[in-house]
Image 1: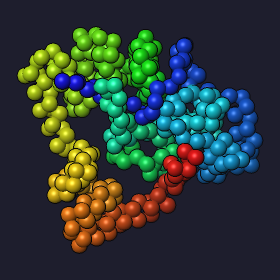
Image 2: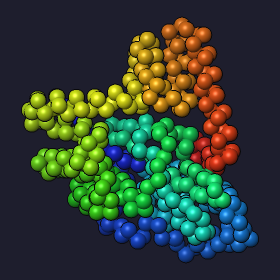
Image 3: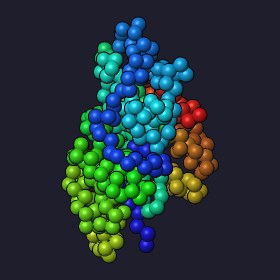
Image 4: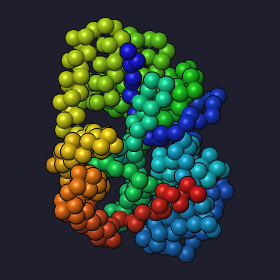
Length: 356
């Protein structure tokens, strides 16, 4: 039986090119002199209010007369490298925006959406992606600055420390190195992520994944145990421990970890949403409706849950309930738009246009 492991990252794309030397933390957000000079001249000069500086910073990042940044999922780079390539994923964009915001004197900080619906799979590994963005506070209001808000489904973001943001940077590099089978660099980078943020369970679980790739299941066991000591409900570590128990022929241990995982997933709206999508694709519309409704009971503020439920109702021939679900989806979107007008920046740019 083929055994999968889960690795958590902030990007879901092909491995980055080999990087021979480790990136020192001090270089991650360092602004190149040319970028600093342009930002001063094109944004800060003549714009004294915080609101004006925030608005101009957004224009500077994406406008054709500014940096013209584009989105690339695998682009985990330093700010200087992002300036050179004009490419960034959610992590690198957040690093770039925060570096500029601090230069402008804005009260800006990183946030993380820890549970999303972004996955891919390759070579025996499932890659599950978190998502980061930035929050700016001006005169009692909060503005969410996000390179791909409309493309990511998950719980509202939570504040994180600068150390965690840097930890994510090295974690991404470590997972990319693991994919290209540079296991020395992978261990180096994941060790740096753990050193920066030792209380984050996903980094320990990812260290276990790298150890498995290196053939060291004993070390992997220790990393997974550490992850679960930090977060007993960490689904990545539980999934990986079940796989490790399977490798060892420990049927009792595997069953125990899978039971623990199932109890957590039963309360996870995104798990039910994924199950519903699978049933819908199979034409099992009654089962799809059941799981979409379960997802809604657990997290009723996501309009895309209702849109998907409406689609399943159409498949089941129930157009009356489909119309009601669509109306609820639209109501939630309208409410979010009003909230955005009061307290957020509108989406900086649609993801499709960023990929042009």
